[in-house]
Length: 164
Image (cartoon, rainbow, N blue to C red; front, side, top):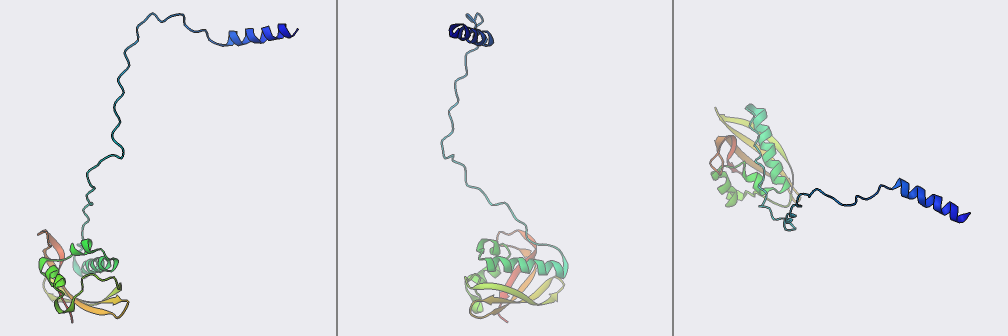
């Protein structure tokens, strides 16, 4: 009885399995040679920073936005970004620490725009207070249209800086 049951199971299994082809008569296409994988880690050229525009809205509101972005970059310690806001003259003044100017400091904690005054038809004098861990400092920024350090013409650029 066990032999009969085993034969039935074996017969069912063989009937359910597809039979293998006896022989392929058609020739198959040759397989493609596998491509070599690139070296790991992959070598890529260095990423270039995406160009980021500076605030350029006209009028006093645009000026305040521009000065705030400049001061935020300084407080964040982003010297590269902060330099984008400067004319060659202003950059020179900061680099020479003219009249005690300090472009970047680890101790900058915040800022406040104290006053905005029109100096002439296209120039503004902006007095700012920069909070530091020790004691706050004030600067006067002279802002208007002009060229930045890469000689790109900007709606707003810090043309010069000083102490009040």
